[in-house]
Length: 145
Figure (tube, rainbow, N blue to C red):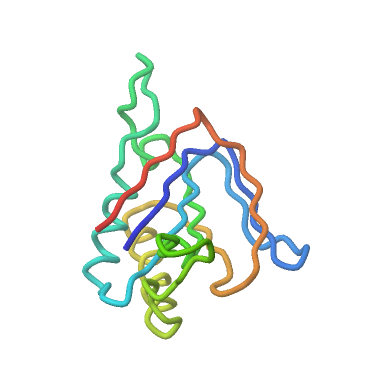
């Protein structure tokens, strides 16, 4: 699993012009799933997202997690994170899991994250989504497990 994690002040996701999900302060997480990923990867990713200390404490140090600040997560499936553009200019996505593998692991990651006490909103798997977000910082972390 590969994630691009962005600290946000707010984020909104829509499909076909219709609002689907919105969060206030928290994390916008773009999640890519590889063909070899398992439920263990989903558990590790959820645990990391819940505990990642990238929010500022009273002293201005990144020392608080999304749980600590009462934030939310917008979890978006993003197969393009496994795009390979090393040969030519058109990316190949053969490194991304097929939908029958990726969709259940995406949903499982969301479930496990919620079970850890973090409110989670999701996108629509496989849909053409529009996401508007206000980055905070900006803070962007790339994590693989």
